[in-house]
Amino acid sequence: MKRIAKPNDYVFQASWEVCNKIGGIYTVLSTQAKALEGIYKDNIIYIGPDLCEKKETNPLFTPDSKLLPTLARQLKKQGIPTRFGRWNIPGNPIVALVDFKALREEKNQIYAQMWDDFGVDSLHAYGDYDDACLFAWQAGRMASAAYRYFCKQEKRELSAVFQAHEWMSAFGLLYIKKNEPGMATIFTTHATSIGRSITTNNKQLYTYFDGYNGDQMAAELNMQSKHSAEKAAAQQADCMTTVSELTNRECRQFLGREADILLPNGFDPAFSCKGAQLQAVRRRARKAVLNAYNALASANLGDDTLIIGTSGRNDFRCKGFDLFVSSIKRVQDSAELNRDILAVIAVPCWKKQARQDVADRLALKPAIKLMDASGMEQLPYPFITHELHNFHEDRIVQTLLGSGLRFSPAEKVHILFIPTYLDGNDGIINLPYYDFLTACDYCIYPSYYEPWGYTPLESISFGIPCLTTTLSGFGQWVQQEIGHQPLLSDGVAVVPRDDDNYNQCADEIAASILGIARLQHSDWRQFADAAYNLSKKALWKDFIKNYLKAYTLAIKNNTK
Image (cartoon, rainbow, N blue to C red):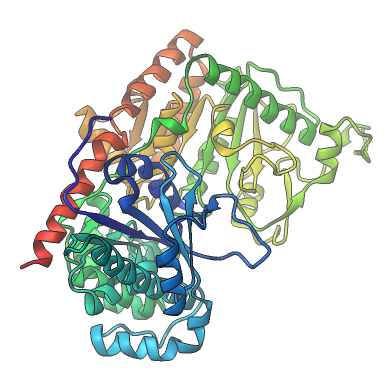
């Protein structure tokens, strides 16, 4: 990448998901790091929570006692235990993992300080609020102490930016604002707490959008504390940012401040493979997925099976998993289909363990056989690979069971539900997520609430055509980039979605599946090439310039 001049000396990025792989922000930061590290070298420090107990290790983090040892000792004396090391991702940036557990005894004083200084209401806190806010407070203290240390070391006033991601890092930004005014601050919301909460509570977000009041909805949805921290950080930041115009609309409506700069999410091609390597990974992944389903359902699907995938965080309505199932049911009922289709749902749930009967079959071990009256072998729930703690309450399971889908090897449309995080060691598929992704011929992400949408971007980065909706930031970006309503021939199909066209969307998605099932391989290859070529327009080497603009603006506003 061509060398880009940095607009400031140091950057501190704080997030609960630094070295903590739980959601989309992890993907943002881990794929972004190489581009920023190429500009700032070791003058960018990612700050995350130290969640490991004494004897535990974090496979994403390599500690290095030779990194900033003097600063580490000073931080420890100040009651900010910090482990410095490297994040095990492309770029290998410096990471500071801060221990915040000792602050739990001080939380009431911290909350009182936040109320006095910024009006943050922590009285209604519950769930993950305490740990997130105490981590953020500690991250702010760490960044402040490090900034002063670097200024002293270089014997000059340095320009530094503290970027806080989401409400979980809001207290860090507010700490800096109060105690280290020489540092510029940026708040980045990847999804507003109120927008997401309206959606997950099955309310119509878009039909009544202009009538929603952020503070009122926070009280109604019991989100006062998270919303209060988020709103304070948004209004106090020297530069306010978000990932798409979709979320910027929420910022104006719910937080009372629109973004100064949009920060669309890119991808780093170092995470994907291509050419002969991609084909080898794809063959291995397809074999693993098909073998798993055949062992699970006593089926005999061959390599000519069309594999359709959906995946993402377990946000049932936000991610559109209900719409995915409805679309698959329409395909199963179609008389036009003359090809086997395996629809795969890969979504981490509250799983217990891999199903032993399936693991035994994959290992060619004898397994207990259940027979029906006709002597045909029957397997319990022949669509799910792992046992769940809450099988009868899980929304995806119950949607599948209530959909009318037929789980028989004799059908042309088959369902495979993988309710575990794909880390390469799940006991059934045993592939990391990106390897699993290559097994798919077509991916569907019919989101209802998606501020950006990494899953479709990841898909096309591996040359897999996909479908998303106009309610995803990525879908809107594709529309703008292509200049017309995107079709599968563009690599990404974007389906219009709103509060009132659920069935129309399901029909369109089903039609797209039937259409791709009829394609010759050469035609599918053209779609795959279009997808990959589109992905090259969404790389961090281009999008990172927006971050530099945000840093420049934050410093400018901080010195006014």
